[in-house]
Amino acid sequence: MNVPDDLRYSETHEWLRLEGDTATIGITDHAQAELTDIVYVELPKIGATVAAKQPAAVVESVKAASDIYAPAAGTVTEVNSALEGNSGLVNTDPYGEGWLFRLRLSAPDEIKTLKTPDDYRAQIS
Amino acid sequence: MPVQYTSIMDEHQAVRNHVGLFDISHMGQFLVRGPEATPWLNYLLSNNVERLGVGESQYTFLLNENGGVIDDLIVYRYVENQFLLVVNAAKTNEDFAWMEARRWPNVLFENQSADYAGLAVQGPKSMKLFDLFFDGQHSRPARNEIKKISCVPNPLLISSTGYTGEDGFEIFFPAQDAPQLWRSILEKGASLGIKPCGLGARDTLRLEMCYPLNGSDLSPQHTPLEAGLSIFVDLQKSDFIGRAPLLQQRTEGVRRRLVPFKMKEKSPPPRPHYPIFKNGQQITEIASGTLSPTLNIGIGMAYVPAEFARINEEIEVDIRGRRFAATIEKKPLHRKAN
Image (cartoon, rainbow over all chains, first blue to last red; front, side, top):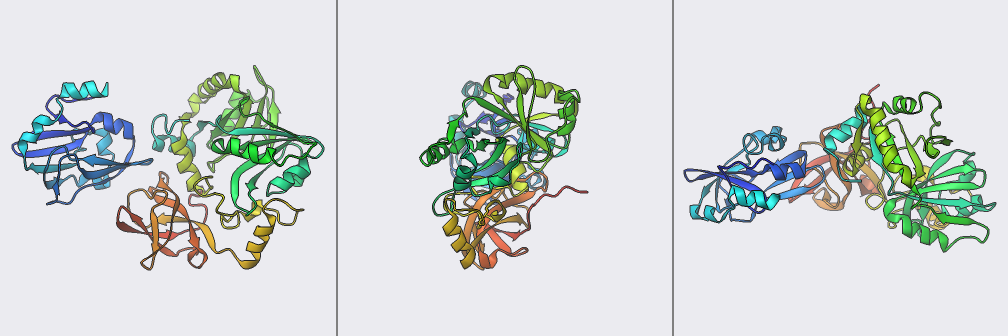
C-alpha cells in the first residue's frame, strides 16, 4: 500500500497535506482499495465549517456509502469538482487528482494529533 | 461467495461481454422422491409440476398461508418421481422445516445441501466454454432442461438456467469436487476472458433484468401477484397452500405492484429502504437498488400503490435528504441490442 511520507493520516483512513494554513484532504490508497470502484462522491459546500472527526463528505461504491471524516477542524475553501464527472480518480490517484476538499484550518496545531506515515503503516499492516 | 474478487464493475462487464463464474455452493438442495412426489409438491409450491417432463424445470414459490413468499426456487424433475429443489442459501433451513412439517407419509424428503456444491457459468461465451470443457462431446441442455453429464471424478448435473439474463448454465455436483472444478473451469475459460464473479456483480446483473431477490423484493408480506410474477402461480390446479388468499386478491385487485424504476439524473446510487415520494408524499421505499454498470445510472425496484404503478410515472427518490427524479419503467431495464 502506498503511504506517502509527506502526509499525515487519520485512523479512519483520510490523509491531510498542509501547505501554509490550507489543508488538502483525501482518502488513502488502503481506503480506495477496500471500497473498490467509487461511483459517486458527495462533497461539502464551500464555506461550510467542519469539526474534526465529524463526517464531511460521502464516498460511494456500488455496495456501500462511506462517510469521510474531517481529520481537522476548519472552513471548506475548495472542493474537487473533477470528481463529479470522474469519481474513479479517487481510485486511480487517491493522493493526487483524487483529492476531495481543502480546508482553512481553524486550529493548525491539531495536525500534531494525526498519525505519522509510520503510525498509519503500522495500523494498516 | 465474496462481494467481489476484483471489482463489481469489471465482473459485471465480464458476464455481459464474455463469461463469468459464480460459486453458488451456498444454495440449498432438497431431494423429493416417491409416487406421491408430484401431488405433494403441487400442494406446497405455487407452480404446476405436472407440466414438467423428465429433465425439465420450472421457477416456483413456496408460499405461506397468506399467499406470501417464504422462498423462490427452481424445481427440476430429475427422473419420473424424483425432484431436485434448489433454494436460497439463507432460507434453506426454514424451507426444509416448513416442508418437513407438512410431509406426506409416502414422500421421501431429504436435505442434501451439504452434499452438493454448485457453480454458475454466465455470459455470451458460456456455450463456447461448455464445448471447450467437454471437447465438443456433449450437447447443451435445452432451456430449463437439466441433464446428467459424465465427468471425472463424478457426473455433473447441468441445467440451462441462470440469474443474469445472459446465456449460461448452472452445475450441481458432489461438494468435494468443487475446488478442482472451479480451477478447471477458470483454466478452460482463460482464453475467453473468464472472471470469477461475486455477490456484488450477481446483484447488479439480476437487478438490470428485474429478477427479484428474496429478502428484498420477495417476502412473506408480499404475494407473487403483487410482485408481477403470477405466471409462476397456477390458480387452476388443485388446492395448494396460499391459493385461497391469492384467488381473493385476484378478484379484489392487487393494491400495490413491484415496478422497476430508473433515475432521470446522475445521483448517488439508490439503495434499499430509501424513501420514494410522489406529489410531496412518501408512497413507499426502495426494495432493491443499485448503480447499473451497463446503463451507468441508478436503477431499482419498489412496491408502489397500484394507482402510481404505471410506465413513465414520475417519482422522486430521497437520498440523504435530497430528492432525485426517477421514472417507472417497463421490465427488463436492460435489453440485449440486436
